[in-house]
Length: 208
Image (cartoon, rainbow, N blue to C red; front, side, top):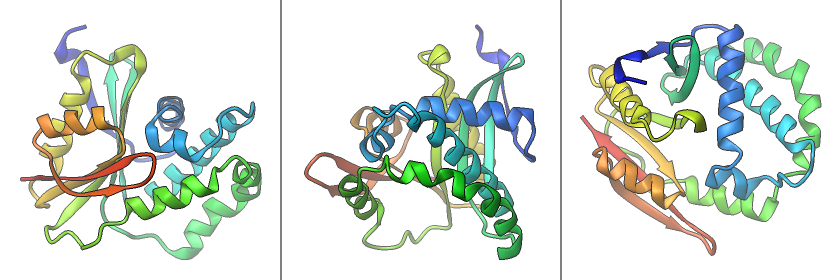
């Protein structure tokens, strides 16, 4: 596969591409450090419930005006990035999305490792607000089949180019040391580091 075969597109609605992108997201992130630390995937139904939660969360993101970008190679979705930006959308409109699905997700609550979840929640919080006007790169994932081909690097460049005009920085956090090194090579600087008994959380910022 050559580089010029990968294109990037903004998801605007809940359609077939949206469903495919969320399937890729759930499949990729079930082994991601924070997710694996938070949920017990030894239970047979956890993967399905995690996917349903991912789907619901993404629908809320779109309704609130956040961005979901996909990477495509020909007709295949090979990557996804979720960017928190502006906050909009009425409470009533969000309820229409959440209420029909929320009861189906109650079983996932029993799969949460609560001690770990509390530790994650604390580590995710910055001690001081970021001064720069910024977007948050909440998640970025590349299909395992397409990893090692430079798509992640191109995806980061795409995010930087899309938001450089209206923002001053991109913020993200990771508990994966390997990913921390990848982001560092892409120009991200560690602005804060949180520690727990099991991992370090790296808060990183890319300044335009």
